[in-house]
Amino acid sequence: MFVDEQEAARKVAWIREILRRERDLKSRSSAGKRGHVHELGVSMPNTPLSELQIQTIHYHRERGMSFGMISEIMGISKTSAHKYGCDVQLLF
Image (tube, rainbow, N blue to C red; front, top):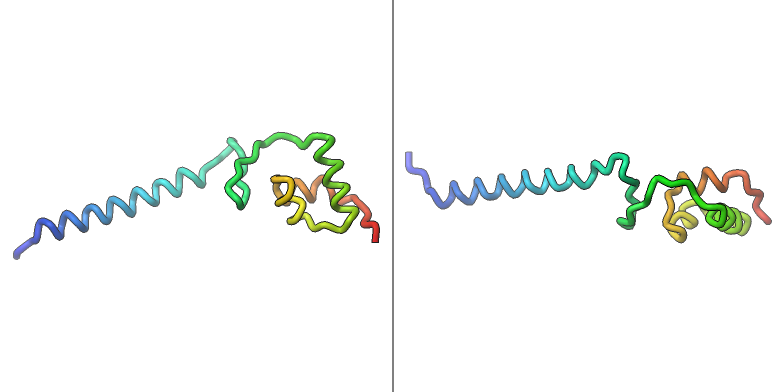
């Protein structure tokens, strides 16, 4: 049986590249306790929001903004926007 060494080397390199990419993806996705990753790629710390941030959430919610829009504008998670803005009454 004839084995082309160059072809075998290309296949090995291809497999190694796939394994490297998978390893890189796993290392990026395992942020753990270091922080959450926003959809836009901004790393967000696990710290409570400041009073000014909470007031800003209330301001935007009173004017009818969605939690998704607030989270994008402020760079926080939708969960945080909901947690601090769910008790706000809309003005209209």
